[in-house]
Image: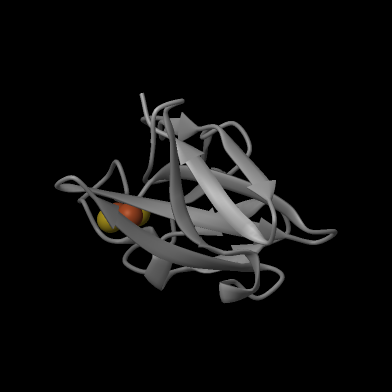
Length: 105
Ligand code: FES
């Protein structure tokens, strides 16, 4: 897209308090829908051992990695619990016309 936003999915493709994997241009991302229809996006792989976070669980504002149960705050990417200590990169998200758009840096 000319303005840098990438059409990722329909807003309804993600259940509330769930996460969706989105692959684009050789990279993988995780898009989260929190309670109250708040959408966020991060890099898709855990910073511990490169596991897809979209296979984990959303707990409140956290994503729990499916492999060793490390947790990140999906809003800031902040690592929240052992064994993860490296923060996740986050990406701006907007919702428009029932679609979710990502801006990837
Ligand atoms: S791979 Fe995610 S916590 Fe270990």
